[in-house]
Image 1 (cartoon, rainbow, N blue to C red):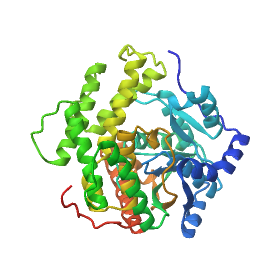
Image 2: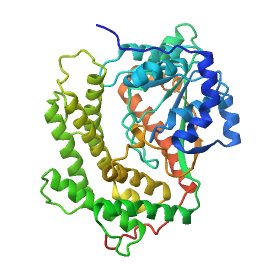
Image 3: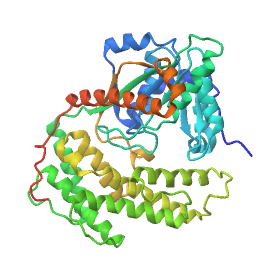
Image 4: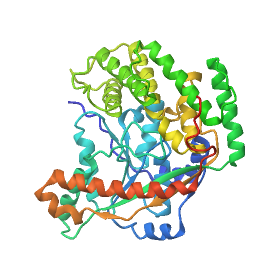
Length: 424
């Protein structure tokens, strides 16, 4: 069978140009004006430059790979990266060539991508080999203050890479450096409120809604409710429970289940959570897009593919819109996460996760680094009970990343009173 794997082909000229362009790219594509790393953390991560290293970070947006590249420069080293296979075909393959030059290789979702797994093991087993991984996987959650469930595959590959490394060096080990990236809007809060009011006014006007003296939080929730009611009508969903979260959940599951039925997906789990369902559909779409030869893939026309892709975006928007998330801590950053969903659904803008316009406000990316973990500390127990050790390892990593997430909350604060929802 033809291989669809694209290996890294490091090119020093491409790397140097990427080094020079990295701050500019962060500003122009993500509106990130500065990456903030504490001096003591810079000293600590510099000491890891000669280690076999797995850089482990949250992944709420498209910016994290660029920030990981920035961190590699701070460490005076080079990382390897994985990117979804279809990204290598953008701009007639020019993007793929650039990716390869920076040490990026492809990964094919939804199938046993043996070549990609083999490359992962190889990179991590090499002296000073380094790889960036986002354990939450795809799609991104778009919520900077939440962590999605971690995927276990990279931990298993890490232990395999350690075994490979110890064939030539019995003392070899692989370090995991967990990090948490927090985006903080730089605009003064009074101006942020004015900007958000202007943005939500455009959404309300498009929907034919009136602010009616509501505060900013109530206006956002009102728009969310209107979109919920419109979707229920569009999909013929009978309202049997007035709970907002239940109704939003019903919408996203209805959209995804109908898509799976239309595509006749064979391994679609009706009882899975919405993120898992979305992954099942989007990975199938990607396999179709790259012409992966499998008899299990549905035969879809270009028009059907476009329809399903657009419906996936809609389902994703409803996955991200969790009222409790905004109500409990209505910061500028959380308001803008919701605003992006509204603009996608009402104004038809391209979501930033799909290459849309940069963030409305200039931001700083604060990078927190947690304590490091060594695969070697878990390896003996792993030989005896693999699944138990993988679960514990991921749990330890998640606890460390959650601690950094909690610490990051002090960098921002609500712009309206939390819980002040009144009549929406």
